[in-house]
Image (cartoon, rainbow, N blue to C red):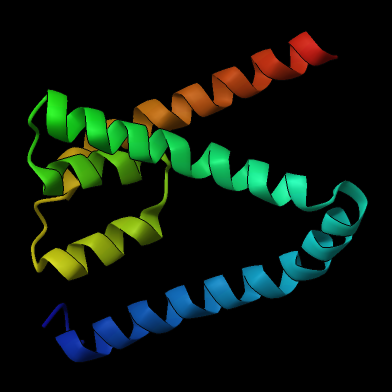
Length: 127
């Protein structure tokens, strides 16, 4: 129990809230995505996939094989570096433990700071 709310009710509200967020985001982004895909072609989709997945794959391989990090902590750090809170929740649920948060916690603020800083720098360079 948390306050006067049973754990099952908290879990239900968390799951429904996350599902509603993802659903509404998809409903809003769908038409924009389709029009962008028509304009730019499939290269935009494939480029976006590469830019999103390649750092994660390289980071996981480097952390696991070179640094010999614990995979659960490493995955927590990678989700923090992408600032994806929903992935952190899924990782915690799958692991059945809050341990991945130990990797997520330091990576998340650093990623947010770099995201903000580099966003401004890139806009200034290309403007």
